[in-house]
Length: 105
Image (cartoon, rainbow, N blue to C red; front, top):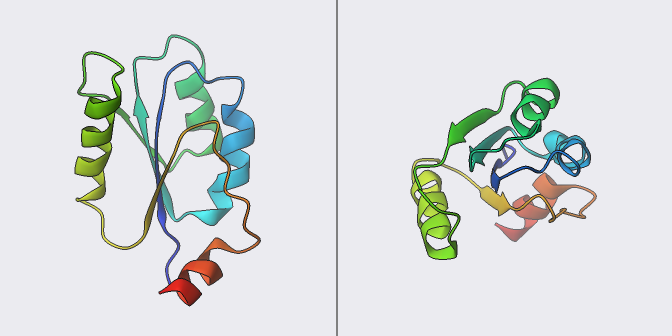
């Protein structure tokens, strides 16, 4: 099985992002990060630690739950295979995500 794709949205998460990226990058084949117009170093941190990941600017004017969910679902619908959507405060704690998904499937 191929590694899944990671999708996340962020806004000014420079404190947690280095830990979050270093933890999750090995688990995923690719990452798609939705920037809610960060004004800190969040974008630079992603470019430094996961240069192959995509960073897109949100299409939404406001940081609002329903519009965030719709945007993430639209991105998910364009990707084949397994996808995982996390926020910067969420960490997957599995020794082997791919093996888990393989067994689950």
